Length: 499
Ligand SMILES: Nc1ncnc2c1ncn2[C@@H]1O[C@H](COP(=O)(O)OP(=O)(O)O)[C@@H](O)[C@H]1O
Ligand SMILES: O=C(CO)[C@@H](O)[C@H](O)COP(=O)(O)O
Image (cartoon, rainbow, N blue to C red; front, side, top):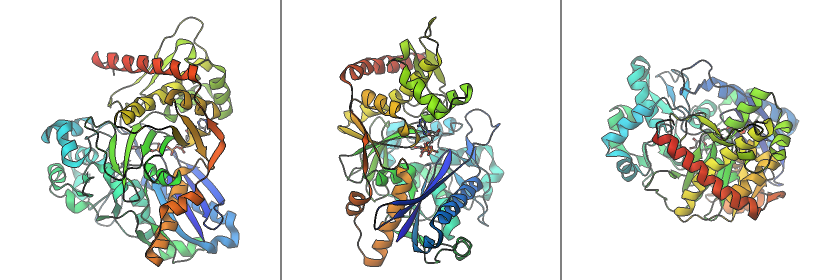
């Protein structure tokens, strides 16, 4: 049997076909899309139709690579960027573009909700998570306050991967993992928190679809799509999940002890936990995972965002970026890049901006800028890793996934900055692989009443040992000091309201 895994990320959709028997990836494809241009600062939006178009194109590409063997496709799993707000009217039409996880226009609404419940400590004690602009709930209040006509039309609220599930099956439902990123779910009980929802709007609870186990089958493929694509109408769609939850499955991070770092548009660090891990400071998010456990997670908003801006500015391809980063010394000859181009979630600086510090005659080179950008993006995540360590999660090895993890220079910098071994998986598409594995799990569970993630991931998730990097003790000590400089600069600029 074959399983299609789709990851609908912020910059592109990636698809892979997994052969369950051999573990081989038989086909892959990806299609890019953009943010909607020309919106005011802080407003980051996409058309959900761009996601369905890219998903369909990626599926059709993969099926073409399979030829007649496409008849062996038994299931599809969907991974999607977390937190985005998709609103449907009574006819299930999309009312307006989706506000994304990186949209920070909702800072005021976020403060309003937090204030009602006793500030961040109140929100954390009520539902397990701080109220942050990236989460879905403040986006809903923003819509109510800024676009009342659109708000009055809302019949259903979905997240990006739920919308793709709906497009594939016609069924509207959420699962615990992605739903926990709305900030409306009490992550301990995995039920909607009525108090918070009612504060945003008395109608909100009725707009949210049922939420259930991430282990279940979501539905079967709509017959018209099955016919168009030439695959079985019995093809199942699993519950799917947020991209980090699916990345956890695809990197074998399904039991305590493993840590994954994703270098995508965002940067994330996450672990699996058998119980909720609630950070009183709210910096480590207390999400649910998509195997019906929990996923403590730190997210920064600016990872390949920073390197992509430099690539555009200087017209570097990825090979040029790689050689520039590798050619500059650790510390980029004194240049420190605070990477907060889109604002930031960790630390919480929704209105932040990027800062390049330490320019002197002689050190302003393309190589130093490239190196400082990669170091800055990685130091941002190291700030989160320190918080993980304070909560007792102490990795000796970190599994890397996402686009940036394909860079050898970046991997060594990550090992040195994290002061831990890093290694990638045989595929950079951890989230898409996780989605395919989840589909295999869900089908097996539906048909036999039992399925076991460990036996699937032990067999299907392979580390690429050739990518393993060990920390260089000298560089690790240097970066420990640089992280202090980086954190100190951030705090001081925040104190003077610069960030
Ligand atoms: N070798 C590399 N070095 C640096 N960046 C890379 C490399 N390969 C891919 N990328 C970047 O990774 C990003 C895509 O990563 P991905 O994890 O797919 O993001 P998302 O899921 O947020 O769309 C792109 O910006 C791409 O240019
Ligand atoms: O908001 C978060 C995590 O809480 C982000 O990680 C998004 O889920 C976007 O992911 P990428 O597109 O960067 O993979």
